[in-house]
Each structure stands twice: as C-alpha cells, then as structure tokens.
Image 1 (cartoon, one colour):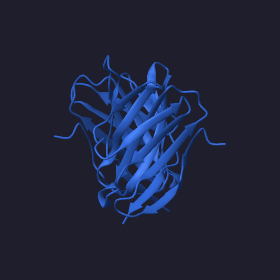
Image 2 (tube, helix red, strand yellow; image 1 turned 90 degrees about the vertical axis):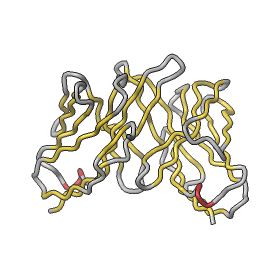
Image 3 (tube, rainbow over the protein chains, first blue to last red; image 1 turned 90 degrees about the horizontal axis):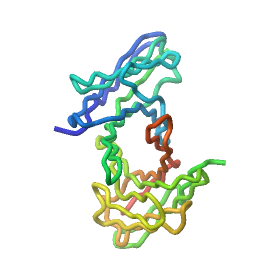
Image 4 (cartoon, one colour; image 1 turned 135 degrees about the vertical axis):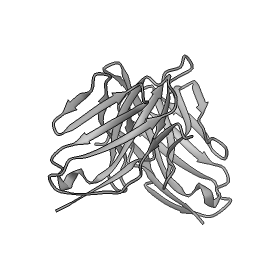
Length: 112
Length: 114
C-alpha cells in the first residue's frame, strides 16, 4: 500500500459545483497535513494546512479524519481558475528530520 | 523576483553526459530539497540538506549527487545521465509556518535524456 494515496481523477465539474477530494495515508504516526495546488507545468504551491478541527479558507475547506486516516479538501462554488492538480502532503516528524510524503495528485477540470 | 530559482529551466542531454542543475534561494531558509516529478508517481525526494554541512539521501538518490555550496545554493548533479532520469526536477526550501514545516518550490527544470 502506498504511504499516501489520491484518486488521480480527472474530476470534471461545471462552474459553481461543489467538489471534494480525499487523500488517505498509511502511517498512523503522521502528524502534519497540507494541500498544495499545482498548475500545469508549474511548481506546487501551498494551498492550505489541515488542522485536526478542520479549517476553512474562503471556498476551500480542509478536514482531517485521524480514525480513518484521510484528509479531505472541499471546494465550493468552483471557478474556472480552480482547474489544477491538488497534491496532499503528509508529514511524519522524526528526530532525524521530518519525512514529507506527497500524493500523486488529483486533477480538477472546471468547465464553463 | 522569485525566492527560489532554478537553472536551467529546460535541458536536453545525451546518455552518459554529466549535468548539473542549480538552485538558489533568497528566503534565508536552512533547509533545501531536490525532488523529481514523474507522471503517476508524484514528487519523490532525491536529496535534502538541513544546513551547509548536512546532506542526506532521499528515497531515490541513486545516480544523483548534490552539493550545498552555501546556505543559498544547492546543486544536483547527474554524473552519467540515463534516459529514465528524464523528469521534471524541483528544488524546494522549507520554513516553519504556524508550527508546521512548509515547502516553497522553485519553478522546476525539465530534463530530457536522450
């Protein structure tokens, strides 16, 4: 089983739709979680951290479910500009240095 | 100006050639990383450095070497390039944001090995 797994998609949705992605992780010792956004042929950029209590940033909501070992990203009122690949990142903190593991990404395509 | 820069941005080389990819940062971060990204495989860590005197292998370091010339510079070398090293390479730095390590990526270098 991969350490971090994401549905590659693509998710094709119309503008205005609500869409959700999940990311599962296998290491129960994972402590920090992030969502990054990557546009085609560009570098990944931090979208938002994921906190245990869940957090919201405008149209984006991130949640963590430790019992089932997954994080989710919900996008409401999708815009054309939301079209990108969304990468989840899971961090295991170690005394020798944190281990960051990236998911392979979920591609979102928002159509007019 | 970009905080993390990579040169070259694109490179075509032949099997067996030595090639160096360079990364510079103006963010003042101690930690720097090299990743490669392949379709369907996501980002995989090649090497990382927590400061100038600290170099560590990542999950796929075979065939690569690195040099941390200064806090701001971290170079990745392919001593003898092979076609399966064709990929998109990213340099990154990291910092602590709200108690969490956050990564900042360079624009990437597209490498094609023929």
